[in-house]
Length: 394
Length: 125
Image (cartoon, rainbow over all chains, first blue to last red; front, side, top):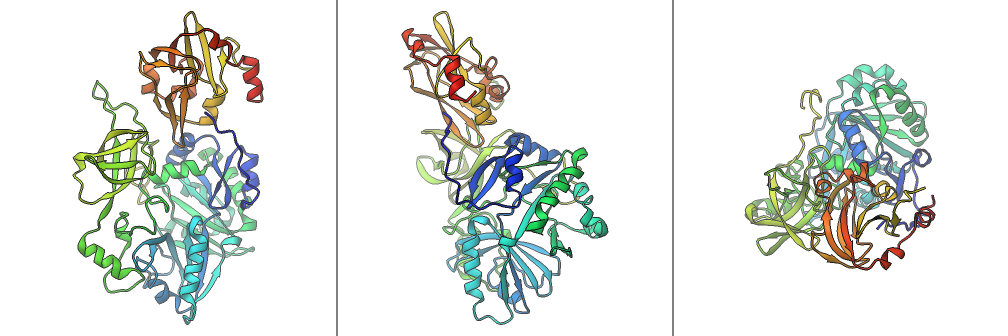
């Protein structure tokens, strides 16, 4: 029942924190070519720690590509589904980059750190693809200089209701208390440091208030240990990739390779709010406009696997995982992109990409050869608490 | 040293013989390796199962694993409480977390199971 085989991980990349993870009881797994911690205490405990207190994430595997010069603004705007031209300094934008046919190459964050100082933060799994894509698209473009800083940049996320309190205690930020307090959601600032600048952004992938810190590799371990030392009274603990996935799932944040793919568009994947079609042009715009005009053929829906008990209360239901077929009556209608038992809500929930025309009342999901009824539920399943006072939202 | 009042399987299940029947659950090692159990599928009472047959599943956030019957016979009881509260398997895998009971068809099948010492060796205890 338990798979005790060990995989050959001699080719995996490490982060400055890999030895720390191993020394502190993390179960390590391969992910996007890196050896990463999947859990420490356990996925449910770590999930609750972030929802209730504060957790730290080593996300050094993400890609960071710097773009500088006077030509970057217009050039980047021509690659992103969301508008980046006209961004004020310090603003961060969530966007997709698409192929000409509208298929999603990756979702990412674009940082405008200064007039001519930009940073593209892409998924680890798409780093090579995006680095090649942007380099190819920048060839011969005046005023655009690219610098792939991924290999020298570590990234630590601090997320949870106590994230602001903890981050404010860092020695490096003691002179920036006002800047940190003033940092609004999806903004960032650069902090000059002896070993190279840090970037502090108020962003995150958990639905909780928090920060993502980009630091040179040599600063990562001291920063990680400082956060743990400072946050004991706040309940800080390290968080693995398993909980990272359950945490992002509850506010229905997309995960590339699940909700996003080159095989469908951002409109079908439910991130149309990050697609600005009017009065601008970008790779894929025409295809997306055509699809929007005709109505996207598929859409991402939220589903709950229901198991009503005899007494009217729901009993535990199985999890509908990625790939589980969804049927509209007897007709295949699509499949699950992500699913789990939501730790905070206690419900078996899923996101599924299905044909647009199906009557919700006829949907079922197939799990281990059995069809289960599902309810369509709106997402986000858990409202992200990133604006305003995180405690007031409860 | 694992509980010596019962026998074990290489699939990390324990088997407690009680008269004509055997109670089956998963070991502490299994519960720890699996992580938080969120859902169980157990055989229906009255089902006749064979030794080694996959009769159910145990599901965590990260994976689904088969449950096997360590002996052949008729399923005479299923732990309904654990179906409603799967986390019981993690909290108390040896007692409250029992899964199902089988009326043993052929007692010699019990002799084929691992002793506590054998299972200890298997898990490197």
